[in-house]
Length: 199
Ligand SMILES: CC(C)(COP(=O)(O)OP(=O)(O)OC[C@H]1O[C@@H](n2cnc3c(N)ncnc32)[C@H](O)[C@@H]1OP(=O)(O)O)[C@@H](O)C(=O)NCCC(=O)NCCS
Image 1 (spheres, protein in one colour):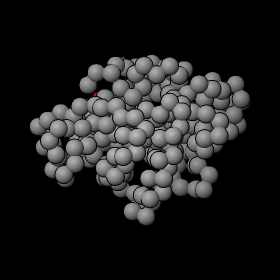
Image 2 (image 1 turned 180 degrees about the horizontal axis):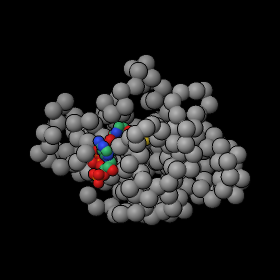
Image 3 (image 1 turned 45 degrees about the vertical axis):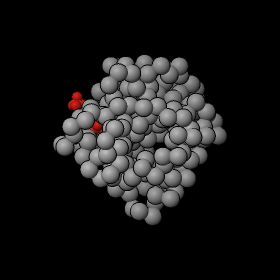
Image 4 (image 1 turned 180 degrees about the vertical axis):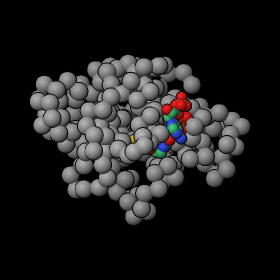
């Protein structure tokens, strides 16, 4: 759309990420349209995630402010998955039930967990999401990358993006404890198809 200046990808550390949580949550809200009362909880989750091992976050930014005032077009982050992390334990149990513990270990025993990837709606479909995902996973030393995403028919843009970099379905129509919508858990062996840190 109105996109004269392409975004640059910039890695931020835990502190830089936590400091920018307000604009990051603005992108999350614009991309996901969650009920506003869920945003404080999402912020707390992101603050916790930033403390997880081998946390890595990337911002897609422009130098000049965008139409809504900020410079962020999108962001992505992930970390090393470990027992004791809520998502890791829930998915490990479900994969064990489905395919046995060796299957669960194959996917989660040494995994990079991509927790969030969002692009502002005005800047979607310009390659920012793919660039964020590939750069986030580039150079990671884990055996696999895993994530969960809404499981809808027809496929969401996110599902199509993940399939296009070689991710396969590990679980479908999966409901996390506490209810809510159905998710697909997807994964790939690293490196991803098309992987490169360039944008
Ligand atoms: C998913 C998302 C991050 C993709 O970001 P993006 O910058 O729009 O994606 P890209 O332009 O890099 O496109 C990458 C691929 O995604 C798929 N895709 C993206 N938008 C699509 C659309 N509107 N319809 C169909 N496929 C689409 C395509 O496979 C595309 O590859 P192609 O351009 O070669 O066809 C973005 O749509 C988004 O933020 N969505 C809302 C939030 C969300 O669902 N986040 C993921 C949570 S797990």
